[in-house]
Length: 333
Image (cartoon, rainbow, N blue to C red):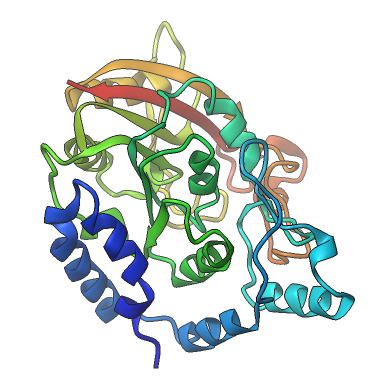
């Protein structure tokens, strides 16, 4: 039987050795609550599949320009076949790409494109304690590791993403990157002095029924002077007549039924200002293309092109403006 706390022991130890240690019991309570609320029926199977990974340590690691672990020459042809079969048992692969011992995991999202948009504009992560909220399988956490942080903690309620993370962690055990399978609602309401130096919340805000509460929670988890990197869906606004608008989808948005609020960047900036964040700036606004999010052999379900108007890719299938994402940066006083 899968023991989540035993599985997460290295993460607990890393937290114990950091200034976050007073909050470890709270994190564990959050894990218990989440697993009580929902435990995936395949979690035992996924955990068993980890034992089939090749028992070899990588001769090469690259995290600065991509995530590459090991070289193809380290594995026999039989091991290569087994590795790919094992990796595909964790379908769907949403965030990436990853390169593992010569196997290219061509994920649905080109998450490296998003990272490239922000990496040169954020505060350096060297020796920092970082939180990535809604981290998916922690692709961006591994990219953060290239900057030599003290600790990167990714949180996401998906137990499949936990297992995809565990695959990479198996080969990168000494890097200070860790994962808790919980959402932000399971974290403490505030960590005033022991807070995070940098918090990333990317692709989460539009899923929250109360976006201002989400921003406020993020702020309270930051240490004073810490930086928030917030990425979310936005709409264009008339900068003269209607600069502060919000789209509330009637039902689904791009076939997602959990999208609640999509503001203009001006409105988003006002939300952040009302939460007493400072130095607010819009880093980037980019319309998501079918080249950045698409179906692949590693994610064979429908993807962005299926959710856009077939006659006008500037609109969703429901007639709303097509997905456009803004990256915002701000600080806590």
